Length: 328
Image 1 (tube, helix red, strand yellow):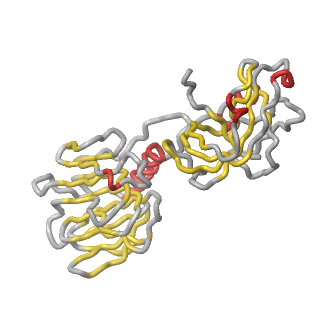
Image 2 (cartoon, one colour):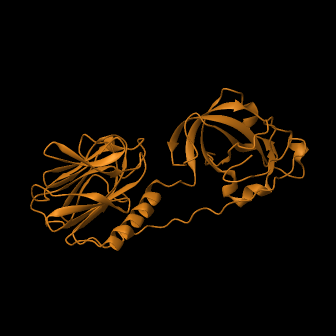
Image 3 (cartoon, one colour):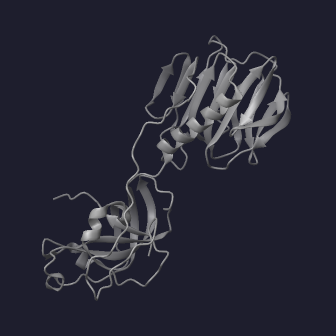
């Protein structure tokens, strides 16, 4: 049995606490982005709600741009024609569909078939492959009269010359769906090293926005149970966690990369508290539950508790613990 590592479960017959190797929870931090301070504008979705102005940058949050309807940094971005001209531009994004990601200078920056393309006068130029439904970082640097493109830190072989001024700028057009993680503009040419530094900053920002949360709220159906023992059988202990198997129906809130609807998980829930049997003893297969869970190994205190588990052995099973706040 495992959750982010191998854990030991306690058999029903032994009724003693398992040996668990807990993992320390990740420390929360606010990632710096962009790494190179933006001289014109910078937007990311961490603190932005509704329509705001970041210097000359107009940001409009649109709920229909949500990636799986649960991410905070969904936006369309517009830079008016009377704004200061940019010479370097960074767009960090997570694509969900094909379409036009950005438009400026008579050019469309288009996502299609797992690649990013420039469209100019109806002709398409393949720039580079990108990651599907994962973070991508595109940075454009105007050098002389043409644009250099860097995709996920690598300089593309293709360059392109805009047919008009680089303003107005639009990012996140209606033909494209996805998540805009950040947009930044500069009045000068970025160096190759600065481009790479900004790419790393985008990764840190994306991880902060879309990385795993400590807990996840799920709706799940009960598939298999462990019978709750009599309180006398665990004496001198007065509380016991009991393992049940669930199938996730939906993820209500939070993010955990290992979890998705349809996945079977095992959840330790309190079967005995303070010497008394809980309502878990009334549970039956088919019951529906809404609960807040976290990996069993995420908190060391649970290794001190009696864990009762008679479910079929499965070394690949993911084990969690119910940490739903008490309503009493």
